[in-house]
Structures are given as C-alpha cells and as structure tokens.
Image (tube, rainbow, N blue to C red; front, side, top):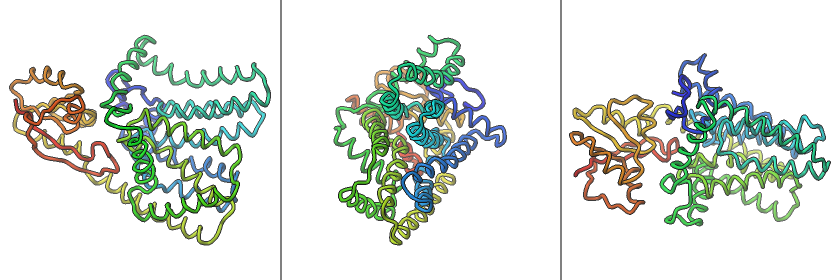
Length: 441
C-alpha cells in the first residue's frame, strides 16, 4: 500500500517509514505493477550487488578461488535467501550493510578524505532502509577513533561529523515533509515507539524471560538452527564440523589482525542489541549476523588451509543450501499464509463478526477483508471496545489471549476454540500458526 500512498499516519508503512526501501520498490513497481513483488525484486537486486563487497573483503585475507567460495556460501545461505525474497526491508538492508562494512575498511586503509565519506553515505542508506540497524554505527565510531589517532585533527573530525548528519538528514527531512511539520513527526515517532517497545511486543526483557533464556534462544535457535542451518540437520552437521575445525585453528594459530576485531566488535554490538532490544520470537532480526558469522568462520578456516576436504565440504554446503533455500522459497510462494486463511474463513461466515487480533490486522487490512478487525493490546480496552458490538459474534486470536495472560488475566471460561490455521513457520514464525477462538460472555 505504501508504494501507491505513502502515509506514516495510516501505517503505510509504519514508522520509521523505510524511505529508501519504499523508494526502491516504487521504482521497480513502475515496471512490475505489483507492490509486494516489486519490494521483493528490489531486495533480490540489492542482494546481488553485495557479491562485490563480500568478494573484495574476502580478498584482503585469502586468494581468488577461496574468496569465490566464501561468496557462494554466503549468497546461498538458505534462511537469508528466504528473507530476501520477502517484501520486507531486511533483504536490501543486509545488502547495503555489506557495502557499508566494506567501505569502513576502505576508509581505514586510506588517508583520502573522500573515502572517509563512503561509510557515512552507506550507513545513511542502511538506516534509511532499516533504522533498527543503528547499532552497526559503532563501526563509524571505531573509524573516527582510528582517524583521530592518525591525524589528531579536530577540524577533520568535525567535518566528518557534519557530513554524517547531512547524509542522515537526507531521508529524515523527507519523512518530516510527509508529515507536514517537525512536531507532527516527533509525535508520530513517540506514539509508535511507546507501543512498539513494550513487554508484550517482546522488544524488552520481560520478567518471565531470563537473560539466559533469551541468550539461548538467540544463539541456539535463531542464529544457529534458523539462520545458519535453516532447520536442516544436514547443514547443521556440516557447519558443526567446520565450527570445530575453526575453533582448533583459532586456539593453535594467530589468525587475527586488528582490522578483524572491528568486524567482531560490530557484530557483537548488534548481537547485544538483538538480545535486549529486539523480539527474539522473530528470527529475522538476527539475519544480518548470519552472513557476518559465516564470513568470519570461512575466513578463519581458509586463511591457512585449502585442502580438498574443505573444497568438497564447502561445495556440499553450497549445493545443500541451494536445495533447502529453493524448498523454502517454493513453500512460501505456493502456500497460503495462515493470516490469509484466517481472513478467508471469517469472510465466509454468514453473520456479523468482529475480530480482535494483534499484528495480523495489518495483513487483513491489506487484503481488504469485509469484517471489522481491531488490533488490541490490553484486556481492559478489549472489554470496553466490544461493548460497541453487542449484536456481533466476537472472535479473538491466540496471540491476543497470550497478551491477556501476560497481564495476569484468566479468560479460559470465556473462550471456545473454533479452528486453527497453519503455513510455513520459516517464512512467518510468529503468525505461521494461528488459533481462532470465539468469545462467550
């Protein structure tokens, strides 16, 4: 919807608006004339360009043939490929993140002022696509510290800060213009963040989730099982062997330089952000870490070893990832999402129905369903709102009920299970399974 009518107030899209992502989709949409496909194609095209920075970064450590293998492994990563083919901003954000990281090292290895501007430009594009990648800005801080140690020039550093602000203002001012005023933009931002960063939203550590639980979920489930292995036992086994070999080399050989630590610090900073400030129920939030983990792993392995055993194993990984990725993308393209099934089911009811849901309502609105549907957060508001629909049959989803339970409300005596809908959990881990309940007063 945002490709035809860009309106943050109407959640088309929601704040912060993903301006560069939507702009890319608009350009592609002039040819394809299909909003969802246009955004997905923009992601794919952007990801294809990331072959260049990945290869150039790898060449700083290993030879041409090895670098091509690194590119092949990262580009065929099954879960990342699945995310890239979705009309979500992660795909293009990851692509430009690779350009940003490459530009950081280009700037570090050069005294030319113009090259110091490259990472500032690419970081502006990254944030203009996905603001939640802000922690990756630690790379610019590292670069500025290094630059100060080299030149000790306050004027040079000040100019870099000014350029960084200018690049970011390019998309921020555009958003402000769409809202009409700075105050309107600020109010919109605060209204979104106040509802987005809450316990129910899962973007903060809750009392029921210990840091250890979130750490285990983030590393074991999201990064390793989903992100790297794509829930494939074969990929998990092969990567486990590579990881053990990598640990052995790390313990027995000095393989790192100071530049390598930059990449580790950048990745670790985002990891901490994902641990404490992102929804761990959505593995897509860790997608940028998947490529970084694979890059570090492969560089460590190939830096001083290039046996036929490694070539065969990496070839198996590339082929396996291609097969698994194709299966995931095919399922995503052919299976009807659970949220769509929910909408079709209630559309077919021969009665006046009202559905109370959570994030599913955004998809229902896009599909223009015939029945009223509302996004509800609190039990008190739900009780008040449903009074306006005394003659309607009230339905709620299991996600809403879980929200009520987290607020200490027991509604077991007021609900009756109606049916369930399911689709690919890999494509939509949060709403790949939806259970519908009827509310009984």
